[in-house]
Each structure stands twice: as C-alpha cells, then as structure tokens.
Length: 127
Image 1 (tube, rainbow, N blue to C red):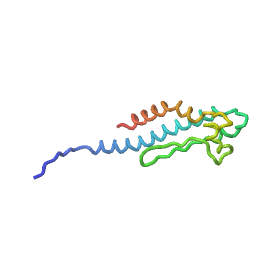
Image 2 (cartoon, rainbow, N blue to C red; image 1 turned 180 degrees about the vertical axis):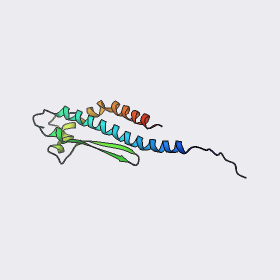
Image 3 (cartoon, rainbow, N blue to C red; image 1 turned 90 degrees about the vertical axis):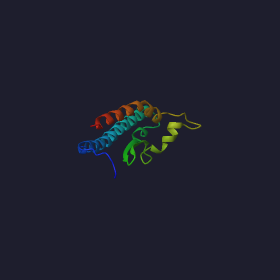
Image 4 (cartoon, rainbow, N blue to C red; image 1 turned 120 degrees about the horizontal axis):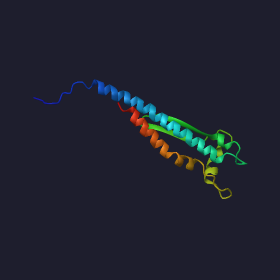
C-alpha cells in the first residue's frame, strides 16, 4: 500500500506561475534593454565632441538577446561602422594616446538602474 499527499485546486496557481514566467521574461528583457540604451547614451556622450573622433560616438550600439538561461546585452562600438574599429584603442589608450574611458564608466553608472529594473520585473511577474 502506498501513501501520498493529494492536493486539489492547484490549477490556478500553476497557470499563474506559468503566466508569471512569461511576464518575468518579457519584463527582464525590457529592463536589460532600457539599461543598455542608457549605457549606450552615456558612452556616446563621454566621447562626443572629440576632434579626431567625429563618427565614433554613433558607432556605439547595443543588442539585447533572450537566451535559454537569461537575458544578455552587448554594448559597444560596431566595428563595421565608421571609426568603430577604434573602440579598444579609445577606451584603453596606447603608448601614444591617453585612454578616453567611456564604456566602463557608463556601465558602472547604470549598474544600480539594472538592479532596480530586475527587481521591478520580478515584482510585476509575481501573481
């Protein structure tokens, strides 16, 4: 003879959790995209106006992807755009050029915003 526990009426909870999962994925993607845009704008503003880099700021782009394990964003210069291939040289400098730190500081400046966005996404996804 086997024994077990029978719980009745969980269909609603299961449906709420499934819907919450979809909301969480959507809201998390939005939170990451909003922060990625802010990082992009911050990085662009830090390098805008440099005499020898007139097109570099517009080479800074971002992409957001949902993966099976989460959401990721890639932010930085697009090497196929004008002056985009100069990204590492600009950010880190060289023996002849001082660095113009722009991506790292922009990311750091927006880290708390990402945490807040994820917290809101979690809160809104709960049934």
